[in-house]
Image (cartoon, rainbow, N blue to C red):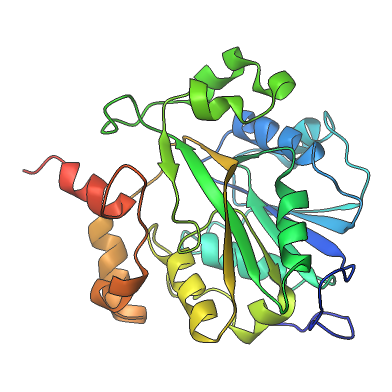
Amino acid sequence: MVAACYDSMTTGPGTELKIDIGFIYFRTLTLDHLDAAWFSLSQQDLSRVGRVLFLDNNTNDAPAHIHQVLDRYPLPVPVAFESDKHGDPHRTHSWSVNHLARTVSAPLFFFTRADYILDADCLHQFYDERIGAEQPSFVTSFAYHMAYDDRGDQRIDAFRDIEVHRWRERGAAVLLDEVNGWRVDSSHLDAGVWLLDISEFNRAGGLNEQLSAWGYQQTVFQKTLRDQGTPVRCLPQFLYFHQHHAAPRSYDLARAELARHWGTVEDLATFRPSVTQFTGSVCDELDRRRPRD
């Protein structure tokens, strides 16, 4: 990874630090997902943000159409826009996060994606938690996955339903009570939205790009952070909300890839996510419910 340009990352409580935001729009999402996520980003306290680093990771949408969405909710900070139509199916989450991290020039890196709606106070609370820490840290919060019906065993297109709840006017928190989904309390193990000192990101070597299948990329990264001594702080509040989208999700492929390039699921045994409704992980619970031939 490329080292960022700043003097010191070891800061105490009350120290002011700048933030660069990484925002990824990827292939299995739509412009509607992007609209909701970008709107929520525009509602954040961006007073400490230097730049937003936007990556179109090989989507089917023309850059002009993407810009039309971004222009609806202009930000008070520069947006570095990049559209990469590389056509490589292996350039997924790990590659895209690392790609953005190489251009981070602020001490703090806030990461989010176009499938996440942020509570209006998300960035502010993450930042306050980091500044209150005694050392560089990884900060996230509980998450809400709007992807299942009342029984929890069937994916639904929740995005089409959420606008009727007027969450943009009332605040994203209304989605927690009014849209079916999963309350996930395991982001300290596998987070979708997070804030991290770029020095700690670089020290961990970024994400493992040999892991490209859905499943374990982020979990392995956060285990690497823990193993190197980076504190992982998870706020017990639901500050980001996952929008449902169709995507290839194969447990068998993810586990086989993990075994080839990192280790086994058993190696992650003490580092598996949990969900408030279940004693096992999201992956384990859904795997159990999967229809068998």
